[in-house]
Length: 520
Image (tube, rainbow, N blue to C red; front, side, top):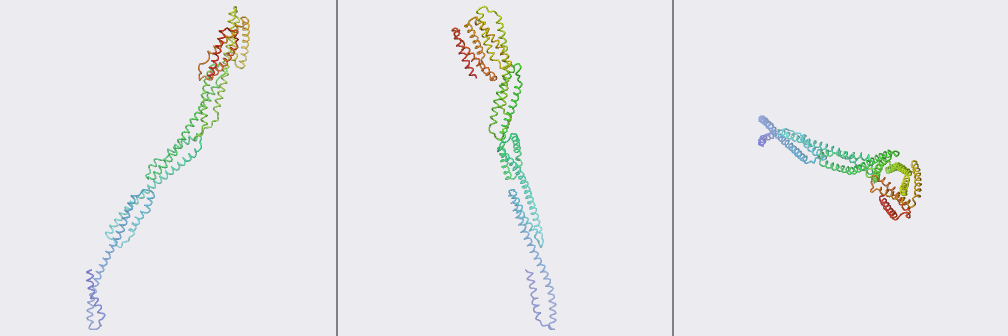
């Protein structure tokens, strides 16, 4: 300001001089003075020019300083704005939940705001440069490095989130596919399925259970994503188990049932082969023992078949009962009938053998008795008793002879022998009298009754049930026959003791008949 004031004072006389010159008259007298004044004025102009030059330099310096100050202020404001925006962005980034949407929003909205602040600095054109401005730009570079680091971290986290999301999508798709398969199985088993299909489905359900990607889900770092997948996986796991457990149970049950069917079919085939192998032509004793074992096996098998058929008729669960073409029970009955037929033939042959031997022995005894002379009444009476016994024995034997060609031939021979016995008995009866004959007949019947009673079974062996029942029926028939015989004896030809003995025999037979009927 002091310089300006001095310059103003210097210029003030000049303004007065210029004003006075305009009003001077040009005359000779004044010319010299004017000339001198002009010379003086010209010297003043030179000094004024120097002053102007100094002033211009000072003014230029002032303008430059002002421009530098404004430039630094503008740049500093932009840098502070850039820095604050970056700091805010860094703080916001640390608070992000890491989801894809939040990261994308940060990348697309927050980072561009920081870039915009940085671009304003880059776009700023400064008329001057100073050392301070250079330092300011160094700060800008540092802030830019921080921004780049933030941007890199955002991209890294975003890429990780994308990877997690891709993994989530893959697992989600895998679980969706598995759930669809499980739902298909559930719809499938609204109706029962064949055993083989059910067995395959059990394996597939176990495989699905093992394929649930639990470990892959555990590797997901995003808690919400992991929780959603774990819930879905648990839901699928429960669906599989709710189907698998009852299906596996029904499958094992049906497998066991089919195993029973197979075992029974094998048993039927095996017993059928054994029945076919029974020889009803050769010596029957051993064959009859084998038939007893086969009959017991058939009895047990029949019970198993009945139990199996009840199971096959039970309501189906998730697995269908297998269709069995054969009627197992009918096959067992057929085997039983075939075995009974062979048993009858073997029994008939055994009876034929034993009856033939017994008749031959009776025939031999009768022939021997005919050769012995009977001198006394006692001898005749004894012979009559023995003949009566042989007669009753032969009559019983004739009743047991089977009705076939061989049996008919033996029956014919037996009837001839019976006729011979009747002749001998008639001859001896005529000799010893009716009373002795009645006594002999009574004694023979008595001996036969005692023989029958002594052979009655005390217990029934379950392994020989059919055979013993057949014997019991035969004994019932024989006892009824003997009962009728003893009732037919005329008590007029018996003494008191024999009559009492007859009544006792009748009572014993009645008790024996009741006992046998209870066993049946």
